[in-house]
Each structure stands twice: as C-alpha cells, then as structure tokens.
Image 1 (spheres, rainbow, N blue to C red):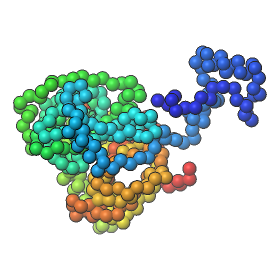
Image 2: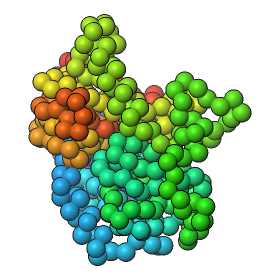
Image 3: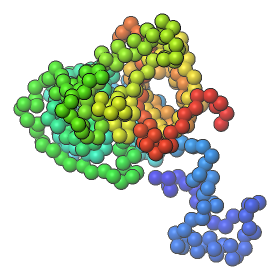
Image 4: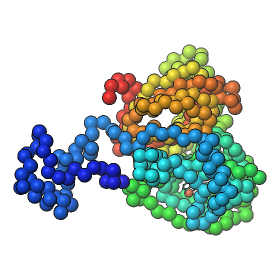
Length: 381
Ligand code: GTQ
Ligand code: FE2
C-alpha cells in the first residue's frame, strides 16, 4: 500500500552527506535496482521517523449524508449471498481509496430493509455493531438471536457464525467496526459461508439473548464456563447499563469524590466479563460522556480511533482540524495526532446534559506489542 505513494529515491543523489555522483556510484544504484535491493540510507526518514507520522488523515463523515446514501442503497441494491452485507465503509482520503477508515480499522454503516435477511457467514475478522438509532434488527450469533437497540454495543469475535434480520416494518441502520484493514495487510483472513436461511427457532424476536442471560450480571460469571474462547462471550452491552455507569461516575464527580473521574468527563470501557480485558483481541471500545461546557485536554496516542457522536453536540479538534459535530457524525483520529473535545449542548434524548461519544480503536494490538504511548501534555511536536 505504501509503495504507490512513496516517491522513488532509488538513484544516485548529490547531497552534503553523500559521496559525489560518479559513474561508479550510478552503476551501484543501477545494480540495486536490477536486483530489487533498497539501501536503508535513502529510506530511513520515511521508514524510521522520530515519532509516528500517520498515513491516515483526520476526517469527518456526516451521519445525515451517510444515512441518506444508505437508504438509497436500500432501495437500489439487494442484500444476499455473495455481497453478503449492505455495508458502506468509510474510506480515509489518504489510504488510496481503499475502504479503510484507518490503517487497521474498518467502519461502515450497514442498512437492512423491513423483513430483510443478511445471510449467515463467519470470518477471522473481529467485529462489533453499535446502534445510534433505530431498533428491531437482531443478529443471530452461533444460533443465539441478539436484539439491537439504540445505544447497544454488540461485540462479535472472529470465526463465530452470524446473520442479521430486520424483523420490523422500518429500515434500520447501524455501524460496524472490524479489523479488516489490519487482517488484509497482514494476510490472516479466512471466510466461510453458512446456511442461506437461519432456522425457524432462530426467527423469533427475543427479548434477551442466551448470552446475556449467562453473562450480563455485573461482577458475576458462570462457574461452569472455564474457557469462553477469544473475545467477549457477552454479545450485547445494553445502553441502560452504559448510561447508568456514566451517570454514576458524573454523580461521583459532582459529589467532589476525588481522583476517580476527570472533571466533567466520564468514560467506560466495554470489558470481557471472563477476563476483564478488551472485548475483542484487536479492538477496544469505549463510551465517553463530557458535560456541557467541559473542554478536555489534548491527548496524543499511538494507534488510531474512530468516534461516533452518540448524543449531544460539540466541537472536536483532531490535529489541525476542528469540526462541529452532532448525533451520528463519525470521525477518525489517526496515530499520534492530538485530540480534544468541547461539549456544547446536552443530549436531546436523556437528561444527562452532556455530549456522549462512542469510540473504538486498535489499542489492544498496540498494548500486546508494547507499542502503546499516551501523552496529555507537552504537545511540542
Ligand atoms: O455484518 O457480518 O461491515 O462481515 C463488514 C463485513 C459487516 C457483517 C461489515 C461483515 C459484516
Ligand atoms: Fe460478517
């Protein structure tokens, strides 16, 4: 992917720290070219920079427009075997037109018309769904139907069978996050078709999935399960729990309880109830609530994130860009670019009076490889 964008430097050059260009030097570089060899000294500035220079750029996608186009696709493009999903991905403008939001992360709006089915399949890519509006779709994971409603987060680790169905009379949109670019670039993908139709027993609209019955009780895990496999066994994190956790954190903040919550900024991370760690091997997900008038300190981190505004409005600053954002808008924070947010007007849906931001990132990979770095001060680069 880089080679197309990388300027050709493979020739003898006259530079202060380089030998004089002689026929012998030119023939040395010719030899490199012929034998497909590249010396480090012409590449080092690009290959080994002093700090991350992201290829991805900061970019914002407006939800209004995404939803409009997804609705048009709903009218014009069928969903079925082969294409698999009516999912439309964010393509970072500096990643060569590929459907990659960041070098590691896929983010897409997915759309299902009333009564439609997206056929069963499985793949090594780790995935999740997050619902910013609507209700009535359920996703069937290994035969367990899981309902999806506004604010719900549904992780879905790789190699589990899954299909989606819209059981209502209304179209429904949601966002998908996957590690497709990471697995594409690292050549680890496998994919299989499942059943064309899911079974009748799986076609009932459930109130709660079996996975939630087993796993959705805070601090409690079933004794019988000793190995839940890769990724969270809890297939839906319901909004009421997330909302309450954030409200309780801000309540502690208002009480002046020290050191637990950054003033005016509550945040929770979706955690695997088996391990307490991230919900997926490659993807971290969080929900942030910033009270009106609060401005967060700029943070730089290695690794990339995608945010979606869940509620409220405000302005976000990523590197040189500042955007006003409203519900549903999605934006990318590339590696090592400073990010901060200012909450401007409160949620319209609840009385939290805050800006709620859903975030996902590739942090688990960076942590596993010990490449994670975060700074909140000294933004001098
Ligand atoms: O819903 O199974 O956005 O397999 C991309 C690939 C969604 C899905 C995407 C997928 C899915
Ligand atoms: Fe899938």
